[in-house]
Length: 395
Image (cartoon, rainbow, N blue to C red; front, side):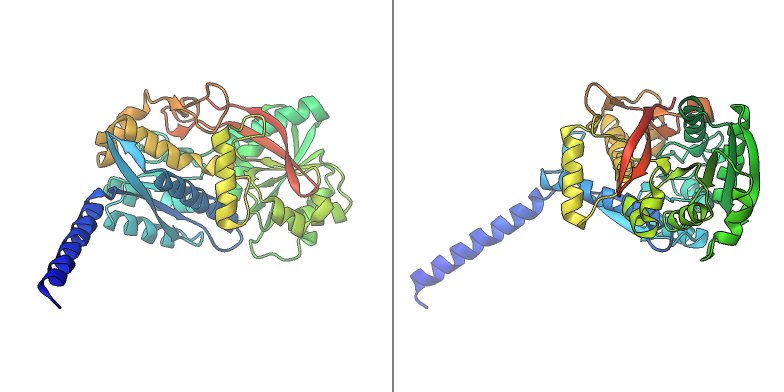
């Protein structure tokens, strides 16, 4: 190699090396947000919707250059852990988040898991957004958990009242899986129904979570001939089986639940027998959805090959975390700054039309702001899709 070639090669190498170093320094710092929830088993649809919503939104943020916090653009990385609906695994997942230095975690998706991780979250300065309903998680002295959706004791009364006024229901029966989540939801649902003046004709029948033949379990409930049958805390996998059993036993009344469901699972497991089934839906309707919500749905669908209506609600947790930190950048590592900011926090809601705002609510239910404000959308299933029954708001 002659001297001129050597100099040219050396110069190009130096320029390339400088470019690589500059690119490295130009990369955005990374903000890690955790997810600990169920993505396998009968309740997998709940957590899968969480994780996919976070990953789709994070990819979108990163694609457009990052999220502005205090004048610095951050890429968002989602660190996910499948707790398999097991409280012990949920604890392990939250400990893993603590070891990674993560201060904000979405999940768990069920009551046992959300309660189990509380000590780990409080000892390691982690704010977490459960999709679980025990009020003790959100009432003082607890302060690290923020409810990521509308609770059953908020949606249940709204559904019962609507059906009383529009369908004339007078009697209601409850059936629940023999686990703490559905049993708790059954008890609060029955109490709410009685408070509204409904006659509760059955609220003691339960089933084991691994039941495959629901006919013997459902028969004594159907014999009470309720106007409304409530499937308390029912998982997406069990809902179509229970619906099918009720209809095949001749039940013609209304069936509802306060948990979110999966239209594809209902179609596959119950078909037309699920028509009219009422459930809590995602926090959006075609009338409420902004261009950003439609783009989110499109990106999610392209990324995962399908869409779950519940993700209209699950998209919000990551948005609240990022927007609250942006409102007070000290909250990046100081969760007390995050809590202080929550009391007065308000930001435009990118997923709804009009002047809707992101804010924290829950004072009526918990005595403090420990719940994200999302619309209560109640759906009725029909021929493979959910149709909006009504929309309400939680204080």
